[in-house]
Image (tube, rainbow, N blue to C red; front, side):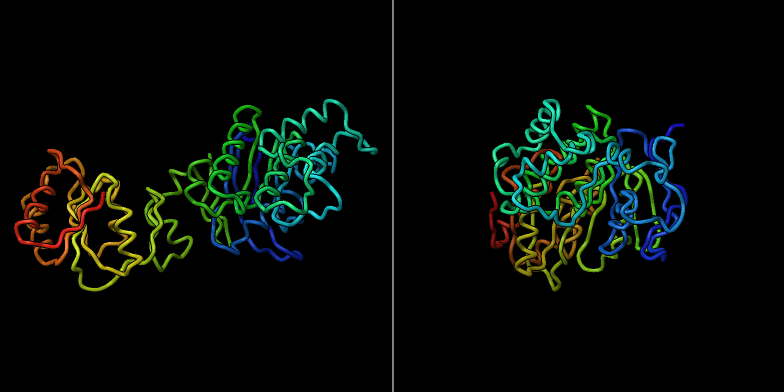
Length: 367
């Protein structure tokens, strides 16, 4: 048996009415699976069903060769910890009190914490950086702090499987990265299997071993990030009609300005993206060039520029490309240069800048 966690023809829903059907995937122990898909597609319903908070409408879930339904409540709580989006209702409980409830599957009917239990609670609080708020009322902390307390509670259970529904929703950039780094450490050091949902596609691509794509009726695709993030697929899954999403770079851009461009942007090597986005905010249509197709600026330029003068990666700039760039620049009133210098591989952009100077074009420098 190569799998640790497996679903067979699993379907989930409410009141015995299926919402998402034919959910099939296998995970090895210690892998991270992330569910992605549009709002309302059924990701939370799948997670609640895996956590046995909802009854399956069909199929089977296997955990280490044993049916999920065969596990007693105590066995399940020792194997699986769950952090869902609903609020925990507490009364006069500190953050440490809430985290410590994760030890209850092990403490017996009286709920008394042993020295070992207290050490595990202490380590969990340190791991998610909530030690400094341990004595604060759980109801009087921020949503982001509350999310980290709930993760500490889950870690205290010492689970084999951790189920998380949108765990980064209320976290700022620092804590998003710290949160997912904690998950990776638990995965690597303790062999923790993680099943979660995320809205942040770029984070899902970076942290996940496997992705399950849910489209509202079926589990549409299951595979590695490399298999899922292929050109055009996620735009179809999320029905992107305004703006764009570029799978390879995970670059998301708003709708490009329309109209006849009067601005030509000379950029490259990642120097132009902020300028493209500033022009988009201002509603200014522009032309970008000359860019190689593997340039860091190329995905954003392709999404936001009216036209991109581009060249095949690793090929010299052809005479035709050079001429198209010259014609486009001469047709514009203004040139924005994002480069301080030009190397031998992009000397053509330096020539474009000299052409703009010779013709008396308005030149804006972006340093």
